[in-house]
Length: 206
Image (tube, rainbow, N blue to C red; front, side):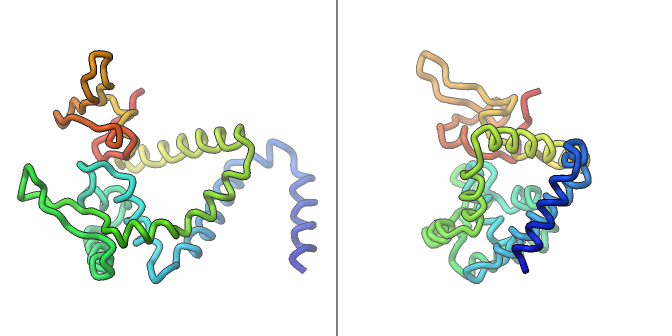
């Protein structure tokens, strides 16, 4: 029965004009359907989708952005929801809290070794594998299009972009004389790993 349905869908889509295939509402519907699929798969290994998102964030964020406040801004959820999410991850020993070495009033979040092991079985890897089967040009166009769409939505909601450090207006690249990367906003020296990470303070270059 599924084969018949797939054939019917194929026939229907093949009769749609190129302009209709790229209709904005259809694109939004495709993104919505993909989101439902990802959400269903994210109920894995005893974790909820938002808990997987928190683990991924802590894995990709630089050391300045691994805080409860930054995570709350990234997820776009309430402080209470994020607090409960972090408590659950702490109980599972996937996340721990650390006192900032320079400012003991500030608490940083970090993945534990167990949390890092969990990410090896991230349910998102199924989608990563599917993307890798696409032609390079398709992947490049898809990445550019989704980045532009996400940027437009975040701007409309007045939310932070959380882009890569190296793409920020405050990022000073290593100079030929050997000086390291530097954040002109936080006045901090940056390692190469910091430059590749996402940052709560990132302001994209225009």
